[in-house]
Length: 113
Length: 114
Image (cartoon, rainbow over all chains, first blue to last red; front, side, top):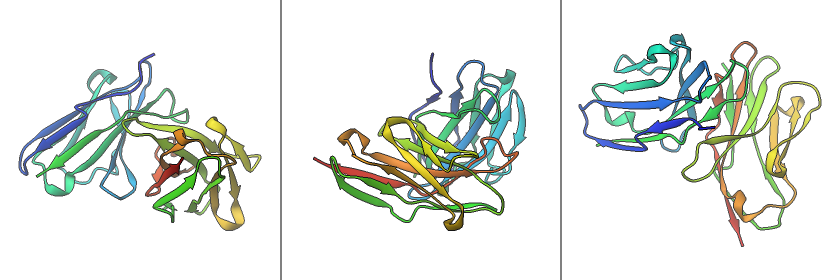
């Protein structure tokens, strides 16, 4: 069984550019989460999808971040325009049910220069 | 709001020595507690979790953790560390109805000396 897949694994962009991160959850997992770790700090919750619906987006930093999950399969997280403080590792995770085991992808390292 | 403190940023132990990683949490009700491990280039992997019941929880890879309500702690332990345990360890807390919306600590980087 394939795990949670994220790409790209690394992205280096300049301030003001747009970047789109993609996450493919484990097949059959209705719940999809985005988390972010800014260097040296804690991993923070960004948002939670149940199928294609946003269940909780309370952790999204601001309106430069847009997450989608069309068709309830893969998800994208777009940052537009990117700022220096957006640098960090973006993790995607999925679970079959809300309270079931969470499986994480290996993350996308985003560097905004 | 809940919070998690991992006071040790880096820990170095010798292979074969015992290990204890500290975690303190702040949450008004009974928390759900987790330990995750991240090896280089990998995603976070769940080591163990506490929801209720026995306060001593056994996990994978020989790890265990003990929930101590009076100390608001959930320390991770392993009696004998292997070189392959070198990784970053994260403590996390969840709450009733919150599902997998977790609050993480800042992580502890474990180095194992041979």
